[in-house]
Amino acid sequence: MTASESLALITETLNNNSKEIIRRGGKYFILWGILLTCFSLLVYALWKSTGHAYWNNLWFAMPLVGYPLARMIRSKEEPAMATNAVSRIVSGIWTSFGVFACSVAAFSVLYSVFGDNVLGKIAVGAGLTASIVLLFGLAETISGVALKNWAIKIAGFVTGIGSLAIYYITGANEEQMFIFTLAGIVLAATGFIVKRQNK
Image (tube, rainbow, N blue to C red; front, side):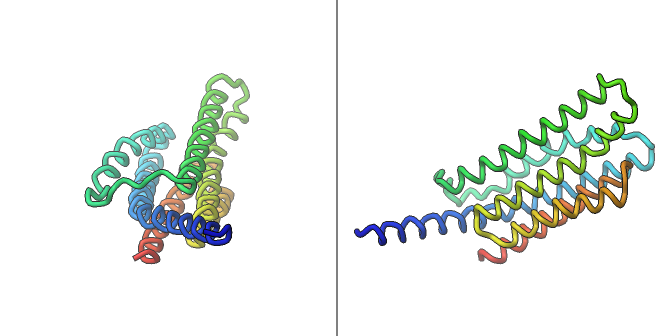
């Protein structure tokens, strides 16, 4: 086998791996998009009706609901996919997102608990939602680049930049939950698009 034939084979394998990751991922995009939308609307409704931001603690229940559902929808007929360069890159992107999002949340909570500047506490707490969704949009866009999928790239851009627009329009109140609602709708729509692309 010549060098050019080897390179062509490697390129084809990587492209096939990307398509398989996208094909399998569509249902999870839909699941997490629906959950994100439902939780954001629930937190918004409870925050709006009671005037208490502590309803944001309900976000901790989302993985408790989501992970068991994800395991349930995993097709038993599909064999486990072998780990490859593309899957490691995408996994690394989302692991990094998780670390950064949790770190931003932890710093915000610690500052609001131990900081003595009331205005600073309000600013840090309010900016947390926009920061997390901006990171989410960035991770999704980079995943789209790694997977060579325009739908995922555009969805990430819309989520990240759209969240900032909603944040600046709504301000630091319960309506900032609509940032997560937008992210959830875009994520679910992306799942439907990639499933249709990869039938």
